[in-house]
Image: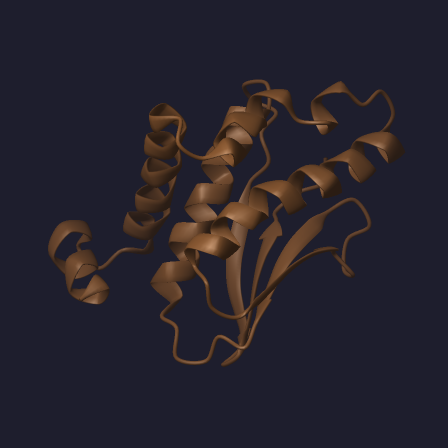
Length: 146
Protein backbone atom coordinates (compact mmCIF):
# COMPACT_ATOMS: atom_id res chain seq x y z
CA UNK A 1 0.00 0.00 0.00
CA UNK A 2 2.81 2.40 0.84
CA UNK A 3 4.49 1.80 -2.51
CA UNK A 4 1.19 2.51 -4.25
CA UNK A 5 0.83 5.73 -2.24
CA UNK A 6 4.34 6.77 -3.25
CA UNK A 7 3.57 6.11 -6.92
CA UNK A 8 0.22 7.94 -6.81
CA UNK A 9 1.21 10.94 -4.69
CA UNK A 10 4.94 11.17 -5.23
CA UNK A 11 5.45 9.98 -8.77
CA UNK A 12 7.57 7.08 -7.47
CA UNK A 13 10.42 9.39 -6.35
CA UNK A 14 12.46 8.86 -3.16
CA UNK A 15 11.95 12.52 -2.29
CA UNK A 16 8.33 11.65 -1.50
CA UNK A 17 9.47 9.46 1.39
CA UNK A 18 11.93 12.03 2.71
CA UNK A 19 9.24 14.73 2.75
CA UNK A 20 6.70 12.34 4.27
CA UNK A 21 9.09 11.68 7.18
CA UNK A 22 9.91 15.38 7.58
CA UNK A 23 6.21 16.24 7.60
CA UNK A 24 5.54 13.60 10.25
CA UNK A 25 8.28 15.13 12.44
CA UNK A 26 6.75 18.60 12.06
CA UNK A 27 3.24 17.35 12.87
CA UNK A 28 4.45 15.46 15.95
CA UNK A 29 6.34 18.51 17.21
CA UNK A 30 3.27 20.72 16.70
CA UNK A 31 0.97 18.22 18.43
CA UNK A 32 3.14 18.19 21.56
CA UNK A 33 2.33 14.55 22.27
CA UNK A 34 5.82 13.06 22.16
CA UNK A 35 8.34 14.26 24.72
CA UNK A 36 11.21 13.45 22.34
CA UNK A 37 9.91 16.05 19.88
CA UNK A 38 10.38 18.81 22.48
CA UNK A 39 14.03 17.85 22.80
CA UNK A 40 15.52 19.14 19.49
CA UNK A 41 15.27 22.73 20.70
CA UNK A 42 17.38 22.01 23.79
CA UNK A 43 19.93 19.43 22.67
CA UNK A 44 23.17 18.89 24.56
CA UNK A 45 25.29 19.31 21.43
CA UNK A 46 23.94 22.82 20.91
CA UNK A 47 25.66 24.02 24.10
CA UNK A 48 28.93 22.07 23.88
CA UNK A 49 31.97 24.28 23.50
CA UNK A 50 34.65 22.12 21.88
CA UNK A 51 34.54 19.50 19.13
CA UNK A 52 35.06 16.46 21.39
CA UNK A 53 32.36 17.56 23.84
CA UNK A 54 30.00 18.39 20.96
CA UNK A 55 30.53 14.96 19.39
CA UNK A 56 29.91 13.14 22.70
CA UNK A 57 26.82 15.26 23.37
CA UNK A 58 25.50 14.60 19.88
CA UNK A 59 25.68 10.85 20.53
CA UNK A 60 23.50 11.26 23.64
CA UNK A 61 21.10 13.50 21.72
CA UNK A 62 20.79 11.00 18.88
CA UNK A 63 20.08 8.06 21.17
CA UNK A 64 17.17 9.95 22.70
CA UNK A 65 15.77 11.12 19.36
CA UNK A 66 16.24 7.65 17.85
CA UNK A 67 14.13 6.12 20.63
CA UNK A 68 11.00 7.67 19.12
CA UNK A 69 11.65 6.28 15.65
CA UNK A 70 12.60 2.84 16.89
CA UNK A 71 9.37 2.74 18.92
CA UNK A 72 7.23 3.84 15.96
CA UNK A 73 8.99 1.51 13.53
CA UNK A 74 9.10 -1.34 15.99
CA UNK A 75 10.97 -3.88 13.91
CA UNK A 76 14.61 -4.75 13.70
CA UNK A 77 17.34 -3.79 16.09
CA UNK A 78 18.21 -0.04 16.18
CA UNK A 79 21.57 1.18 17.40
CA UNK A 80 23.29 4.58 17.26
CA UNK A 81 27.06 4.22 16.83
CA UNK A 82 30.08 6.28 15.90
CA UNK A 83 30.58 5.87 12.15
CA UNK A 84 33.56 3.53 11.65
CA UNK A 85 34.31 5.20 8.29
CA UNK A 86 34.30 8.82 9.57
CA UNK A 87 35.63 9.90 12.96
CA UNK A 88 33.35 12.95 13.26
CA UNK A 89 30.02 11.30 12.36
CA UNK A 90 27.38 9.01 13.80
CA UNK A 91 25.11 6.58 12.09
CA UNK A 92 22.04 4.58 13.01
CA UNK A 93 22.37 0.89 12.23
CA UNK A 94 19.16 -1.09 11.84
CA UNK A 95 19.55 -4.86 11.64
CA UNK A 96 17.15 -7.75 11.03
CA UNK A 97 15.00 -5.79 8.58
CA UNK A 98 14.69 -8.21 5.68
CA UNK A 99 11.47 -7.63 3.79
CA UNK A 100 10.95 -4.06 5.05
CA UNK A 101 10.66 -1.66 2.11
CA UNK A 102 13.29 1.03 1.61
CA UNK A 103 10.58 3.71 1.64
CA UNK A 104 10.07 3.17 5.36
CA UNK A 105 13.75 3.92 6.02
CA UNK A 106 13.74 6.87 3.64
CA UNK A 107 10.83 8.32 5.66
CA UNK A 108 12.84 7.74 8.85
CA UNK A 109 15.74 9.57 7.17
CA UNK A 110 13.43 12.49 6.38
CA UNK A 111 12.39 12.53 10.02
CA UNK A 112 16.04 12.61 11.16
CA UNK A 113 16.71 15.46 8.72
CA UNK A 114 13.78 17.49 10.04
CA UNK A 115 14.73 16.88 13.68
CA UNK A 116 18.23 18.09 12.80
CA UNK A 117 16.77 21.30 11.39
CA UNK A 118 14.78 21.75 14.63
CA UNK A 119 17.89 21.17 16.72
CA UNK A 120 20.44 23.43 15.02
CA UNK A 121 20.91 26.97 13.85
CA UNK A 122 19.87 27.64 10.23
CA UNK A 123 22.57 26.50 7.85
CA UNK A 124 24.19 24.32 10.53
CA UNK A 125 21.80 21.36 10.57
CA UNK A 126 23.01 17.84 9.96
CA UNK A 127 21.98 15.93 6.88
CA UNK A 128 21.21 12.21 6.99
CA UNK A 129 21.37 9.65 4.18
CA UNK A 130 19.95 6.15 3.89
CA UNK A 131 21.62 3.12 2.37
CA UNK A 132 20.80 -0.57 2.42
CA UNK A 133 23.98 -2.48 3.16
CA UNK A 134 22.38 -5.90 2.79
CA UNK A 135 18.92 -7.46 2.83
CA UNK A 136 18.84 -7.42 6.65
CA UNK A 137 20.98 -4.35 7.40
CA UNK A 138 20.39 -0.65 6.70
CA UNK A 139 22.27 2.46 7.75
CA UNK A 140 21.05 6.02 8.18
CA UNK A 141 24.22 8.06 8.46
CA UNK A 142 25.39 11.64 8.66
CA UNK A 143 26.52 13.01 5.31
CA UNK A 144 29.11 15.29 6.94
CA UNK A 145 30.73 15.80 10.30
CA UNK A 146 29.65 18.15 13.01
